[in-house]
Amino acid sequence: MEIWDILDKDGNKTGKTIERGKPLKAWEFHLVIHVWILNGDGKFLISRRSPDKYPNPGAWSPTAGSAVTGEDSLSAALRETKEELGITLDPENGRLVTGYVNRNALVDVWLFRQDVDIDTVVLQQGETDDAKWAEAGEIRRLFGGYDFLHPEAVRSMEDVFRMAVN
Image (cartoon, rainbow, N blue to C red; front, side, top):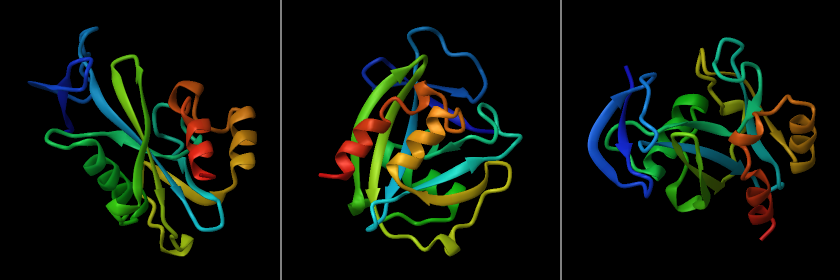
């Protein structure tokens, strides 16, 4: 059972928690993170969601997930990446790119510049079933063909791509 901190619209903890799957009120939020990993060749590590994973089964995406009680954004990013891909990210390699609101989620988007050997990726059963390095152009093509997460989940994708070249 996953428990989330309930946040206000400014991202402050309210002192309340909620079990994943329970409805939040219109003015309540929880923290979600997206993690983009960029290697020295200018490619991003993306993973494919398992066919049974809701929402968007079988879609390619950056690592994403919800913060659990007590976690901040960076801690959630590091944990989710370790859980879903078996990768230990160096916190010094990460930078918060942007944040946005998506319904009852406050979404923080991270970019980590770190080389990872694709052969060391360990996929989490039930979460991910494949991973690969992809250039921004390939990710845009996947997105255009609806093989990448829906627009709400990657509305910050172009922000990440811009930051990657700077």
